[in-house]
Length: 289
Length: 116
Image (cartoon, rainbow over all chains, first blue to last red; front, side):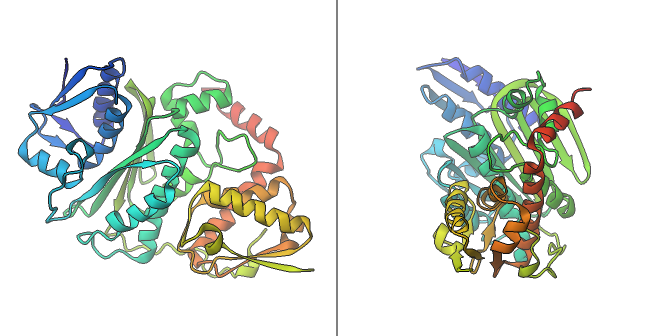
């Protein structure tokens, strides 16, 4: 039996991604073993980070996992998200601060869109957002989902969210265990980029690793533009790289541990009253084909 | 010129135009009519969610076969939500750039990162 002790805190940040990637590294070589995830020292676990833990546990499906010493309040949160370890068992979420955990086949973007509509955007506790803000949030997450399908070449996408009413923030994490951004960029550029260099390249406007007749290189740019106006935040962990942006300030770092997949955390400011309609004056007939 | 109106709602089977597969299907349909010299009108009525992956596959990809003057004459849209027009305009701009000189663009990008 392998016992892995989780750190005292798993937050939506570089340390949180690295801690979970470290678990991935430990479980990766295991087959037909019992793996005990020991939460004894863990006093905080951001619910949205369950997306990454779920992806890691799924990637090591040939093993049995035991989650032990989980604090009752954390177990409640995990069950509120219907985290699959508990067999989908759920607890009522009276304060509605979690967004259900979900494992979605990449081919089922349509059902993922309905899940976002029902479990995230119709969330009763999230203050009334403008229709445009809701739309922008949904479209941003869907772009990330499709990136996982197109570039990650993975089978499933894992997602989970947490809403922080006092901060007016919604964190939503999307994870795939597939081709990393570093791998895609290296193959495309034929350069031995590190994970952080690959992330710096990939988030630029008009860069894409696509080689076919479908243009790319716009999705990340539009999300960044939106999050900048929204005063939100985006983080990406892939391979051995980590990238972060809040407002117009971005930076990249080494993750210091390898994660064979991509985790994207989007943080939205749900109290945003901005208008997002920029060129509404344009007529249908004026679209510059 | 004969006209063909294509309902996006009908193509994707709902209010969300979000998948590359649906975009590819729409591209194939548009292409079939353009090859027959039809004027194609894309009707976005009742589409509430639209993302670039769909637009890249459906419309961006057209620039691999047709140039702007041809598409301006043969393609138009209607009932597009105001906020989605910006997304479409950016998709078109990006597609033109992508195909304008694909090889040179890729070379430039590689060179830009050579110093690192």
